[in-house]
Amino acid sequence: MNLHELVAGAGALSEDLRTIRRDLHKNPEFGLDLPLTLARVVSEVEGLGELTFGEGMTAAALLIKGGKPGPTVLLRADMDALAVIEDTGLEYSSTNGYMHACGHDLHIAMGIGAARLIHARRDELQGDVVIWFQPGEEGLAGADRMLEQKMHLVSGSKPIAAYGVHVFSVYPKGMFGARPGPLMAAAGGFVATFKGAGGHGSMPWLSKDPISPMIQSIATLQTAINKRLDVFDDVVVNVGWVKAGDDHTENVIPETASFGATVRTFSENHSNLIRSVVADVLEGQAKAFGVQVEIEWMPASKVLMNDADAVLRSRKVIGELFGEGRYWDMPNPIPGGEDFASVLEEIPGAFIFMGAAPDGVDPRTAPSNHSNKAVFDDDVLPLGAAFLAAMAFDTLNDQ
Ligand SMILES: [Zn+2]
Image (cartoon, rainbow, N blue to C red; front, top):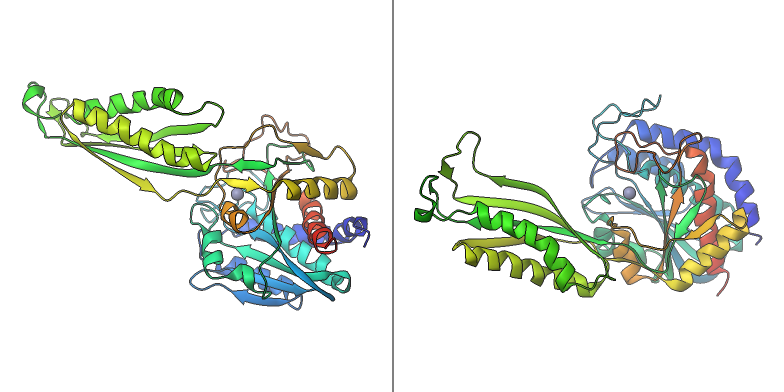
């Protein structure tokens, strides 16, 4: 099959995909329970294949069987919004306190578009395609739950490749970007609580002040990262909150002091090592001040590792579909987290970024994903749909 016919096919779908996307944008849902969103997906893909639903969450896997036998490819569209109050001024803005500020509404429409393109040409498909409509990407590990429920195996065989696209409001419209190896960080974090003994602020030697070791720890961590971890394998530790004492109690030493930090790493080695560095620094400071410290780690996402061959294939397909100069090889990974990393740990594949900055907006200064002012141009919907469908055809018909 000439992949280029997918571009024309997707172009014919563009008005329909725009309507779907804008309806979804107006009615965002948050977390693992997205009943209205899933109902819309189901009504839009009806008759295109066999649907399998998740348990305890609104997830669906659509199986489109090809006309010829062969292996399976997995495509993924995430569906959840953020707890952000929209301030874009768009006529189809959300008013329910949630917002599709990460563009997942576009991903849903692109997944539906890819399903239609593949279904219309399924006789030429040498294998099967599974399209995931996934909830709970934003910190709830929806992809991990779908893997646990074996929703990647609905065709009866483990997919040989998995692909996903993510739109960005700060990249030029219609440009695709990725890199082999690490593309996104393992995102996790910890909460540290220093436990001392309260007392009168005028006589600190009679109590155990928990605030001083907390402050020393926060400062020392930044230096320790630089001294203990390889500078060529980046790590970000950023403290997001601190808590100690009460308002207007300047003369009281509180019993506890705590802080929370986000931690981003790009290798398994550093994901492990950072834990011992944090423990060494905090326990060392606690000992120096005669207090106790407890460190509670949150579950972290995995490092998103792109398969080198899958990235090469993506690059080739983008060239065939849209012409040269539409793909850029990113020099560095980005420190955001993404649960598609768990899928790519199980199945080789690629996660590809796609620019969606609106016309007339400088991508370099545009509000970024997750901002309440982020705007994504839905001109990119047919491009994303054609790309996902083309990756399925190119991979399966190349066996
Ligand atoms: Zn996202």
